[in-house]
Image (cartoon, rainbow, N blue to C red; front, side, top):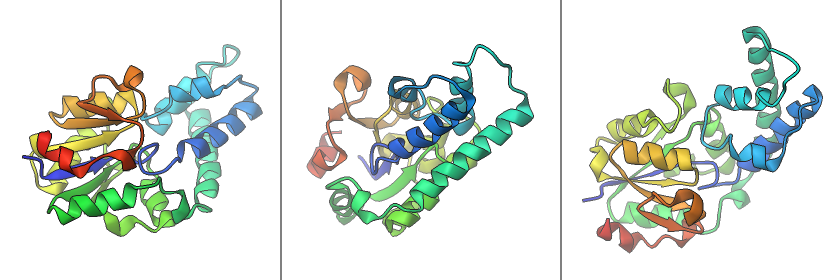
Length: 215
């Protein structure tokens, strides 16, 4: 029996991915590293450190020291925070708040589990922080998705077993993490990329809460 729904943030509740892309592209331009939207797809669902490593792997001319990497990651994050501070509730995907309310009306608990360390700030800017019973962000875990740590911690904080959780994810690494945690997963996006999820839908707001009974 499902007792909790756990939502990823980027690409599931709001499109912060475009702000990440703007910030990473800005950094890549400064470093004269070619960086495309296709490259950006590789950064979805992984930590800031790993994202930076992926970006810098595209630069064959220079080896970066740990101190340089730390400074570059901080610079990118400062730009990203500047972008998200200007977000508002209108940027929440259509139907998401309605879905969360419907889930709560059924007596289920609701959690947010995002690899982004800025997740609390994002939902604060959007004005939806109160919608979640618990929030787990990247600063609270050691291992990034596809490691299941973030979802297992969410289950502990929600006081439910992993088998009683459904995860909403838009990245293949997130789907793998949810399944590795022993949870059901609803993929948001394309079946080609998220085919291992228990169900795949185009948009988060398209999910029918009655389908929870089938899971």
